[in-house]
Image 1: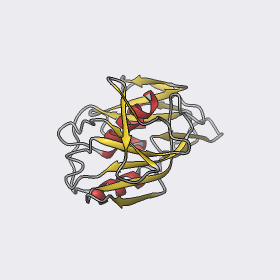
Image 2 (image 1 turned 60 degrees about the vertical axis):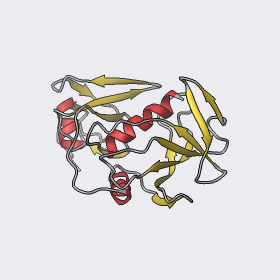
Image 3 (image 1 turned 90 degrees about the vertical axis):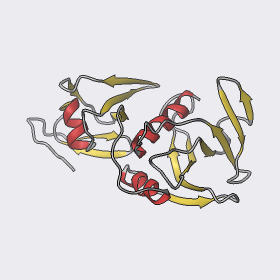
Image 4 (image 1 turned 180 degrees about the vertical axis):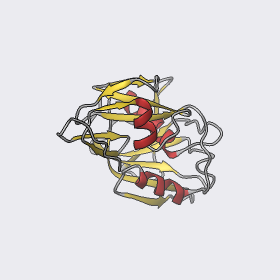
Length: 208
């Protein structure tokens, strides 16, 4: 984990997606945060910063940011990233690498496999801070293809079972009565990445 030196002696703690970083400087360029910390190609990704319920995009790679402890960034992708392996295990491994500590798989009665993130915290929006279990379909060709839904287990549930055209479509989930199915088409962009998928899921949950 990078720990650059500077005249600032205090340590700051910030997050990129779900991964926590510690540093002894509070000044970073956008390029440094993407390349050295998130390990993403600055030419194919955008750094976004959560500010309350809003998300501020930093698209100038040379912009110098003063980062406070508790700052939370998200990486958004604008071009496909090559992949080397596929399927549910790829999704599980990627989610763990992004900092989700409790990830497992479940299979529904129809044989569809899901990656389940236990204790996922809604990042922003009206349900910010709510802790849920999040189910993500993991097709055999993942990440070349994403599932067309997410599944939510929460007590109480975030949204009722209802279809509001052009707003949301929430139905019963094949994972069981405690789960709700949220219909949504996610874009893999030809060849997707798990970080790209999570950025879209975060947007859906934040806009709910």
